[in-house]
Amino acid sequence: MQLFGAEIDLQPIWLTLEIATITTLILLLLGTPLAWWITRMRSSMKVVLEALIALPLVLPPTVLGFYLLIIMNPNGTVTEFLRWFGFEGQLTFSKTGLIIGSVFYSLPFTVQPLMHAFEAIPQRLLDAAATLRAHALDQFFTIVLPLSQRGFLVAATLTFAHTVGEFGVVLMVGGNIPGQTRVVSIDIFDHVENLEYTQAHILSGIMLVFSLFVLMLVYGLNRRFGVKVG
Image 1: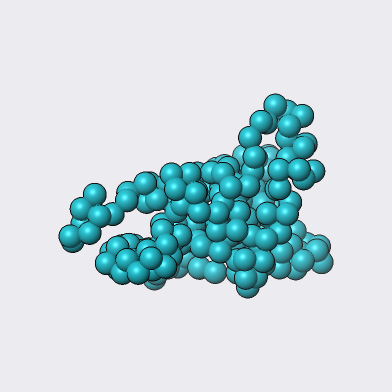
Image 2: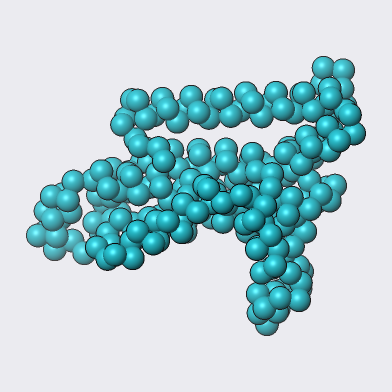
């Protein structure tokens, strides 16, 4: 596609959006019960779990990507285990590997906002529901979820945006295969390496506007509804 006089390949953009969408959905499904479980914990292990979940925030992406590359290699235990269930592909240098890496790397951006939202729910509401013989599942779906809607919106927005901007993990796990694993961040890197600064400027500008919009949305929610972020 021609944009500002330069030829822009839209495939990396669509692939990035697809991976970010799938990653966000997976993390909302997995992160919701995980965040609720940790929130309700009264054990000393809570600190350990919170630290493990937050680890991708401080761990260099290439380190996480390297270990995922080792774990998911074609001759590794994980891949061999999946072959018992009919899995014939490979996890590394594939879209599947990109999604797995994105799930691990974006985990804290889902779990932490959800934990903050769950912690803000008054315990007295849950106690009142318990006196009315509402079991734990009823309490979660009738009280916790409705009162945590803003937290879910923040978690989904941050997770999607963070996944879109990944570089180190996706490069290590997925490589740079045109049409298969080349996402926007890697495409920008390629343009810079090839001295194609016009294309790099355009894609970087799109990412900059997108990131600014996401931050404005998140901080707007935080200011209006008191949703904690991070």
